[in-house]
Image (cartoon, rainbow over all chains, first blue to last red; front, side, top):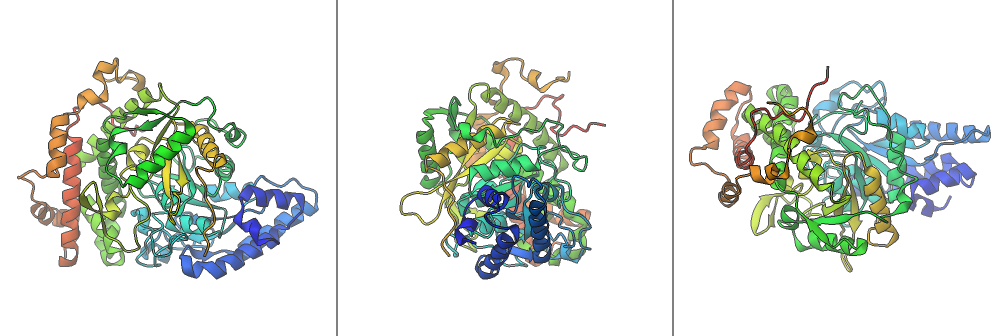
Length: 466
Length: 95
């Protein structure tokens, strides 16, 4: 089997498997060999489900031999952030404490859905402890490392997901995004990442963080793979109380339309200050390619970010308070101390933040009467150096962990769907992402724009040279 | 009275979100990091630690105070928005 196949898309692998050009077992064997070779450098995987993956591949090959129709992702390897339940594994959620739990007796809903489409799970991925992290570092399992420069952060908290896909270990990985944990690693690792609308994809069978803001979604190296995996994962699930009864939106057939006919604008104000020049240059480059000359304002974005931060502190603390009382020293100190502070906040702040969430959403709705898609930076900078604790933004020194999500938090606060699109400047070894933001329930629009950018070469997600 | 649907939350744009924000106060907060002279993170932490049942050890103390100060700054920003008495929080339970 050609090694190049593993550097391509999940859809390309699936097409080859369906056509009988390669068998699923060969794809999985090559994937497992590549993980064994590269994972020591990348710190992407915490668990490898080799036996399960090989058995699944053999079952697919047997089904094909019987003349059965294989799914759209047949034989494509994928992996999941280790807060997803995987039958037989303890769902560690990046923590020391949770790995003492009994192994999961079933898979998370999204794992089942991807496998129903033919994809093959090969393991679980490193992440920031309990998802309260933007760096991709982990006090217990070590850091996930940025495949494009091993001395730099992947971003988090879905750091292993970013490392796995950018490092060519899998074409698709799943992550979670509460305040930016898909979009930040997508930006730092140079990947396409989709944070769907809040309530779109089932969170059943995953370890939570902030129920009001938690989303799940895919990383990929192409807009087509994002759409194909997103389509495979949609559908009602009574296991997630926050899931909306909105109808399924098949997007794969729509993305090739590109950006034609869409009204696209840059977000100004809050989204045009407080970052390094590279963040805004990337937005300009994307806007130029899309002929998006208009700049619009979303008033109150910095307050939205403040409100998201407070909700996160409060709900995160509520989730962990019992464990903090009994096992505080088993936490990563950087996570623990934020959680302790969160438990000390007045409840009225959180209620006020939830009321503001509704007002800010109304403001966004008004804006989407005038435009179809908004552009904003995904991160205020390229990937910081591993272990870096502070950075200077707008002339002020700030904590890295607390402030990488400046531009992602106001958007996930109101649950809008976003594709992070990776942009590379000439001569730069590290990429930076641009958020392509659509109205609620219109993931198709963000995916279409991402596809357009990919087609024009403005956004691209190459496998890193390791 | 309550606004029954989100679409009616702003009957006209003169009542849009921008008009509800005290921009002067927000700018002051951004310049001063929201620090009210009356806010003492150490005093809050010392008082709250026994209430929540988590020990504030020497190792944890400085970081907890830093995060309390960040939260107070952000809460001050949030307080620049005027909310109607009838404003509903975002998550509404559907029985």
